Image (tube, rainbow, N blue to C red; front, top):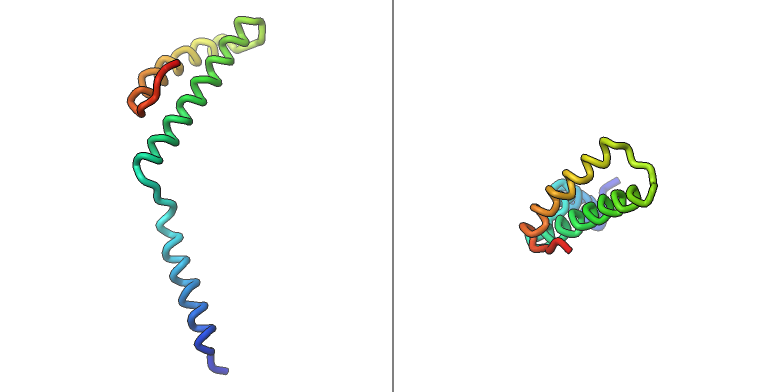
Length: 87
């Protein structure tokens, strides 16, 4: 049985799509920087909340308390680099 032109076209499209998908997702630098900035700000907010809750009596391992403070300091250096502010 001979493949129809439609079948051949479908196979060609599938192979083309598989080839394109191998390249992965591509975004521009501004979008990548914005995503990075939002992630850094979210992480800083989460760590600050943990420390604030700890001061109110919520348990936080002593090593985590020190490490969270160090990470917050590092994030506050990085955030302005990506165009954000430390509020």
